[in-house]
Image (cartoon, rainbow, N blue to C red; front, side, top):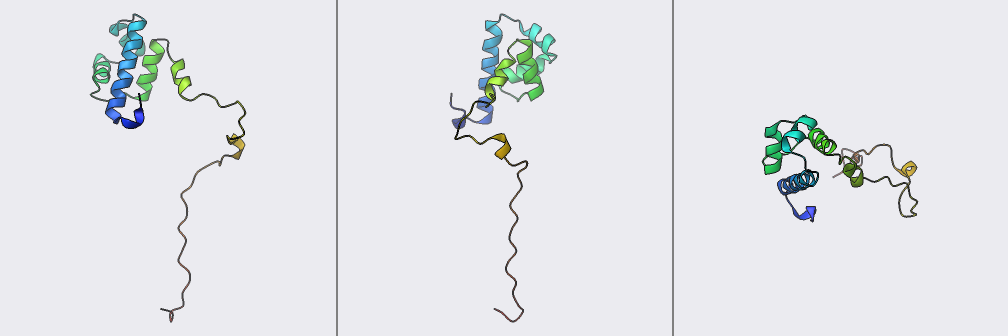
Length: 112
């Protein structure tokens, strides 16, 4: 599925479908998920319907309750393998700042 071509709401709905699929594969009842994740029935229902988003904290709780927390690690794998094209973390700037606007050149009062 190409998330670049989807709206935010469609992506949330797709994530909810994937979570539901995982829950069914593990044969876990919704009430068990709600209890072990510590989320309300309404929160889970709204997430599954795509009506509202879910907080990242609750999403983590859902994955943890299903024993699938390692899926988050797949999203951002450690890039410790060497690649000459990749920049080393030592080469990265410590912070990113907005570029300063240059002041206009100084003009004398009698110049047009």
